[in-house]
Length: 119
Image 1 (cartoon, rainbow, N blue to C red):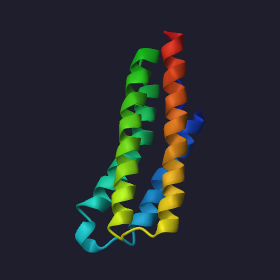
Image 2 (cartoon, helix red, strand yellow; image 1 turned 30 degrees about the horizontal axis):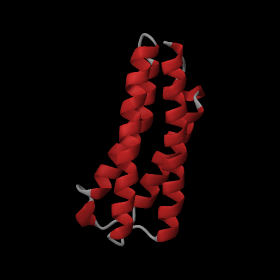
Image 3 (cartoon, helix red, strand yellow; image 1 turned 120 degrees about the vertical axis):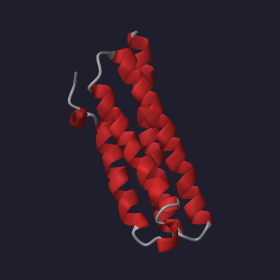
Image 4 (cartoon, rainbow, N blue to C red; image 1 turned 135 degrees about the vertical axis):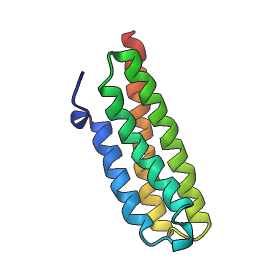
């Protein structure tokens, strides 16, 4: 069992979640239970799944949770695109957040590959 806070991918995921929360503050109230909620839930799910996986018994369990985190990262990627296309997210904010989620996905992919080679 390892401390998830020591993982760079968890740190980057947490930073992404904080950035998503800050960006969605300006979303209209009509989106509070829609896109705002979806983006926040999916982004926090990335870091939460990494943390939960660290608390499990071994690499196989951890790998499963990292895969779930990857799915959540892809969901964030789409919701950011949707928010931009709906005019809720300025292009510069979209570019910044999209870059962050892309970096997290690359790190998750590397971690998944590492965990698979250990088995």
